[in-house]
Length: 311
Image (cartoon, rainbow, N blue to C red):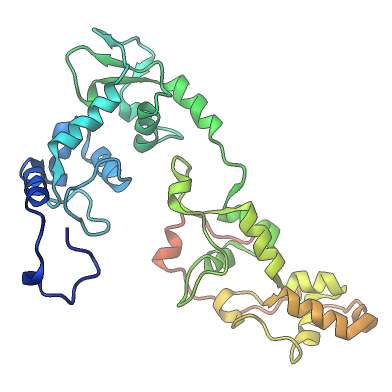
């Protein structure tokens, strides 16, 4: 009940409405820690952790970020029961489920998830779900896989792209994309789609089509600059050095990146005198200066993409 930004104030200066405080204390006393909610919900430990992480079940008292599966928190039994009642609402009861229906663990395998399936159930979108007669828990629900597959196909997101795919329109390799989406003391130059918009999708890192287009309108690589002026990248680099500074140290990103508006201004100043095609230098087959790229961090590996050039 105390605001989170009040650390500097003495706790003995706070007073609370008595009735509201008593209601809160009552909810806490009628609660269980997070590592016991699976026994009430009738699900596995992993499923309970996923529900807590997604905010589908909530502790009465604050829990530290990522504090999942611990003997902390206070999940009110009444709130957990309300959650279960929402899942049961309108679900026909059967003594024996049809053979084509499966439990939540099997239903979530493939392209869906525990959280997504139970959200669909709460929204009334799974019409073929059945409940075993004597059960009032999640493990008593049986789901239709065909129905889930149909909903999964329907929520396909063609506007979201894995990092390995993003590398193609940007003209860089996967390691460069990972550095573009990673904050290094400042905002990332290429923004990832928020995690809540990727629920049910494979992988953890996606970039939207709009963000790719925004990036291409703001920046261009040495390779793209060379194409624009009709030169080999090594010759374009020689031409641009001293006249146009990269956005940041190329050794940080693994690529020379320029502001597009600065490059266009440079073209306007230079006129047509830069249209000569240059020959690549001996020993520099692709005309691009190689820069030292540090080994991947654990955070980059978490994106779940394999590395490799796709030039």
